Amino acid sequence: MPSRRPYVTDAIVLSRFELGEADRVLTVLTPDYGKLRIIAKGVRRPTSRLGGSLEPFAELRIALSRGRTFEHVTQVSVGHAWLRMRDSLESAATAWYLAELAERTSLEGGVAAPLYTLLRRAYELLDAGMAPGRVARWYEMHLADELGQRPEVDRCVECDRMLEVEESFRWVPVLGGVLCQRHPAPPAWRADLSLEALKLLKAYQRMDAEALAGLRLPASVEREVEAVMREFMRHVLDRDPKSLAFLDEVRAGH
Ligand SMILES: [Zn+2]
Image 1 (cartoon, rainbow, N blue to C red):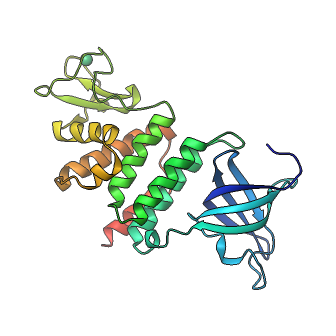
Image 2 (cartoon, rainbow, N blue to C red; image 1 turned 90 degrees about the vertical axis):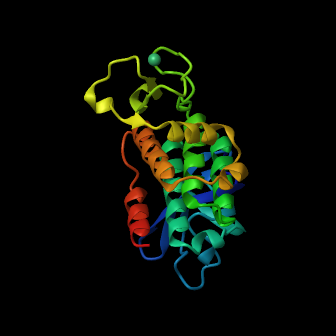
């Protein structure tokens, strides 16, 4: 953590809330200082110089000075507003979901450069028009990797044997990935995983985002992979992200 001297950092706004008459508190992710809680004093007054630049999910360059509870924002410039990402409600709801995952898995005051780069790249992809579901799966897979919880999709999590295409698979997040057919499993773990979904999970680990964007896939396989990754992230976070309910509502409304 820097000393009392003002300092400048890149930051992506993860969430915010209004405080008092005119202030706003933001949670931002920064490459070098991890997650920070910052306050923009007087930002909701029409005369504020900080004004509309402190939007959620924008990449900013901000000058901060140390305060007692929060860092104080003294200057802001917008690096990337990612305006196209906000055009579609599904893409905007996905941006919120990605930000929530980042907020829940990052620490205050720690270096977060890999996570920052991951979130930034995901927003670039959304802004470029990549299907929100694919961006989200790509991000979840890489986030799990960053957290040291990369799902095992090549070997059985129990016996370490390479999985063969002709067998049947079960997805067991609590064990860290795929369980082969040789092991008895309690009924709660009987979530069968199709071979197509297993292949797509491998693709999310191995292929770059551009190649993933170009894949032609049956909707049923994408839904299956969405469900299994959701289950996996629930296990990683130990709860359901709040933003998922909104994302589901948005998609149901389409
Ligand atoms: Zn096994």
